[in-house]
View (cartoon, rainbow, N blue to C red):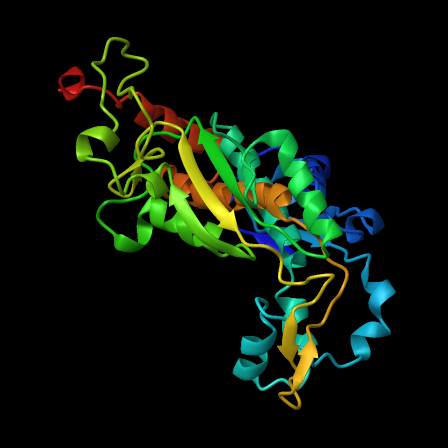
Length: 342
């Protein structure tokens, strides 16, 4: 069950829109056999009537159609620990004698719920001209598009897995979302936390953050151009900072990159130990993907959308879309050189 709160009334929302994004999550080169078994669909249970949100919590139900295929196997204990997964720390933290209690809950399957919730956030943001998209920058050691598929194929043939780098971009974001006053409301900090929470993500960069170590300040800052068009103030020559300054959005496209590590479940398992005896064993294997980078982009969009929608509603408020639009348009009319409004 997915519950989304804080969406104003009169936002048009249907199951097909959400299903589109859920379908994108299930595609991508390097996906495993599970994606051929089920097609995720979020059934709207509450908060929407006649196609429009009511302002109350939106409840959505996503069925796990693969569950019936695992009924017998899931009753068997798993004690062969997989390096790189939640198996060992989860078992130690909660005192489990069966690794399955950790591995099932830590599965990336839960990201279906994130994408469904993120689709609602994206629909809200689109009402105000904000659009998100993502793409894969690299797979393993390969940074060019066609050879990236060959890298996935090579990992599959070796019984291995491969990670990658993904970039998420939000365009049309207004200046001033977030805060320079509150440490826990800084927009880049919230986006980083949201992206780091995605299964297997190990590093996040806002803009060109990973590349700034060898640059001087004059080489990195995004120079502000003179205002020649009152309808398009505060343009930048570059966007190296990725659309944020001082914990707030700067009005340029918001850009975040993240690294997703190779999946911990290998067809050719790594050496490990048994949870019961501590003796050497081969790590546990279950049906798995070879590469999660392409679908991770869709999940990254969802997480960024949730953060932006939350910051947007914090800034502009409103119990209905018309009210929020009035607040937003009133603010946008004041964004420009100060003498213009004195």
